[in-house]
Length: 124
View 1 (cartoon, rainbow, N blue to C red):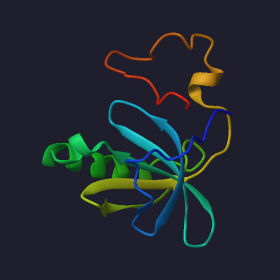
View 2 (cartoon, rainbow, N blue to C red):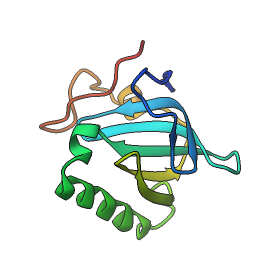
View 3 (cartoon, rainbow, N blue to C red):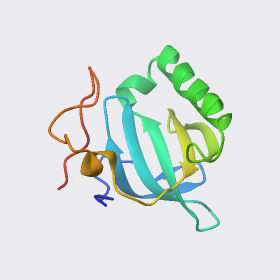
View 4 (cartoon, rainbow, N blue to C red):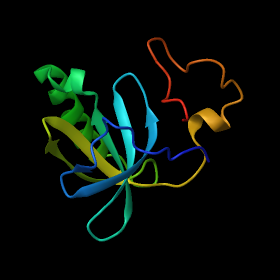
């Protein structure tokens, strides 16, 4: 498994009730952090990039994604635990499922999976 990577200087240390401890990945829409719930349970915390969070339509789409994801059967995806807005940025909290990243398990890791995909944050 690649990552988590250390938090960078501009990364938040807390979103809502969730302490952020590392970076799992980053793409064109936002960043996925490794976090810790108040119970101590590891979680994945997805948030929009600050530049996108300023757009009301982007914030609405992001929060709608959280609601849609909650309806997906638990065996198909990580369970959504929480969603909210903190530091002016919407966030989505889901179960943390430990395993290889898509990039490390793809036979074509030198290519992006879709048009417009910008890739993950590079390791330090």
